Image (tube, rainbow, N blue to C red; front, side):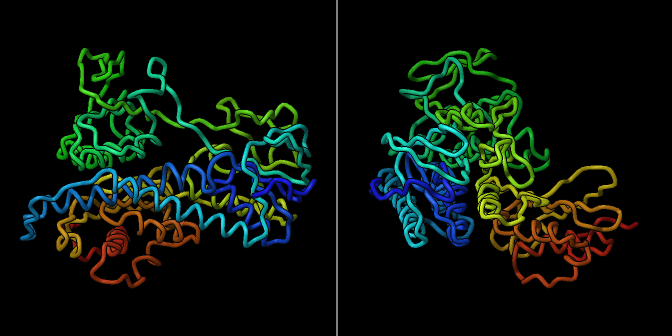
Length: 454
């Protein structure tokens, strides 16, 4: 957009055009505010262009490729299946471009001024923009997201890349070492293993060590079946163009080294010292329940405002922050932020599985008709509830877990009981029946799984 058209003052300035930022801008515009968004790269931010969407696009392609080559049990013989990595990348880029264009259309349609560049705070009411002009604002929202954490001795460059670059490769590496064992490492490792790469996961502890051990064990088992080598209790010591040496003394092949040890909030260049905005000890912008910082004119949302660092949390916070900026008495008071790992099998969780007075019942996918028909029996549903049978948490491991967890999040937000879920008719044959069955079992009336006589 032509920066000469930028007004001297706006009601709301949004710094960062990622999923949280552009949603905040759209909601604010709907409420009648004059809005400007400052984005240094692409609208949609990391989620649409470098992370969420690209990774799930490639995971889907890897699943198709793997299934085509391993469908003999269904009577399908697909010899000669090959992969064109360059065409795959073209598709992945087209998906992101289509979504980016869609966001641009929404911004234009809502009368939002989009400024390409960076913004620096001169004060609690003024931003310095890249082209040297300044922009006064009544309210501002910081939505700058996060950035991959580097690892000492493994600086990015050459064959050492971050997760974004791993999702931009135009070839399938023969070998790949992934430093880290979080959900990002698991997703990237699994998809490249299905493409045929020799994948090594270097884990200080173990795969998904911060998640439910039952779920992590199934994911790790499947990764090993796919040929992924998990090096537990290990740290990288040194590297060459073709290998990584570990603290255990092992030396592993690594045409590509992916550093995936976490994310850190991105506040570089904002010059928050010119405002009253405060950071916590981890570098996150501190906010209250209305997402307002310690500076009353400035709000913050998404990754930069704290854990969990998930796109859907940023989207919800974007809506709330826009409403607060417009004068509404909104608040970020959601009970639960669901999370999904697009591993094999998928893992999705909403709420908590532990705590005083919490009980948990587990229902296996081996008792679900659709799971058996599709040959996707690995997994389970766990449902956690309190003494009053209020649902407090749900974990789903298995195919379509990503699509089912929304029901669990809604149930927890609405204060649903086990009986509410058990008495709700779920369509048959679907994977979602496992949630209903888990609730039935928790109530002591299981139908399709025998837990033993009382």
